[in-house]
Length: 296
Image 1 (tube, rainbow, N blue to C red):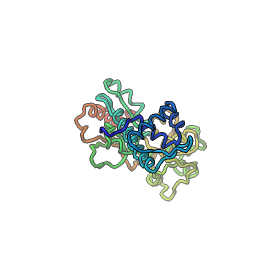
Image 2 (tube, rainbow, N blue to C red):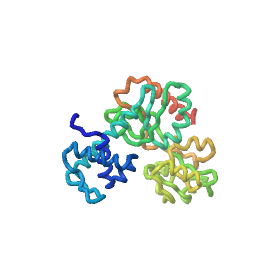
Image 3 (cartoon, rainbow, N blue to C red):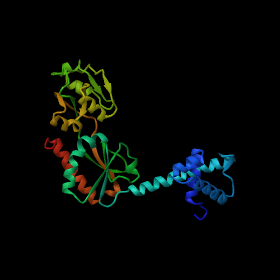
Image 4 (cartoon, one colour):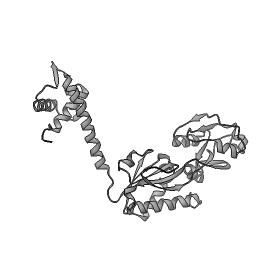
C-alpha cells in the first residue's frame, strides 16, 4: 500500500482526463485551478512520467496516461461503491426491506403505522426494487417478491396468493354492467397480466381485448384507470383500498387467480434475527387478515 499516490492527486487526474480540462475538473471537484495543477504535478512526480502532453493551455493524455486513467477511474468507482455499501448497511434496529414499488405504494405503506405502533424500537427502510442483487450483496434484511418460490440460497415463505379483477373509475362511461358489454369498452392492459382466465370465467373464451393503452407499470395503469381512460384487469392487493374508498369500482363480480403469489424472502444467515421474526410475524398476520377480508 506504500506505493499508492495521494488520493487527491488521483481524483484530480481522473477528473481532468474525463473532462479534458483543468478548469472543468476544478469546477467538478470544487477546488481552484491551481490546486488541480498542483495535484497533477504531484502525481507525475510520484510516477516519474508525464501523463499529459501540454500544447499551450491544452492537455492531451499520453498513451500511458490514457491507460492509467481507465484503471484509476475503475478503482475510484470501486471505492465509491464500497463506501456506499458500508454507509447503507442496516443498523441493528433497522429493517431494510426490498419491495415491489406497486405493492409498497398500494398495500404495504398504509399498514406500516400499525407495525411501528407495535414495534417502536425498529426503523423501517424501504427500497423499491424488483431483482435480487441487493439481497445477494447483503444490503437487505428481507424482500417481498412475486413468483413461484424455490429461489436458490434464500429462505422463503409464501405471504399470500393474488387474484385479478376488472376495475374502472366511478365516472367512466358507459360503464359495462355485464361481461358481454366489456367487449365494447375501452381497455387498458399490462403485458404482465394475462386475460385468458378472466375471459374464460366470463364466458368470453374466444375474445381478447384490443387495448386503447398499454403500460408496463401497474402504477401507471391504475392512474390511467382513475383518470377514466378505460377498464383494466388489476391485482386485488393494488386496488382493494381504492375500491373501498370509492375511487375505483369493480366491473362484474368475476375474480380469477393470478399466476404468481407474494413471497417473503430473506438470506439464510438472517434466520435467527429477532427483527426478522417480528416483521415476518406481523406481515404474515396482515396478509392473512387481508385475504380473509378483515383488513382491506
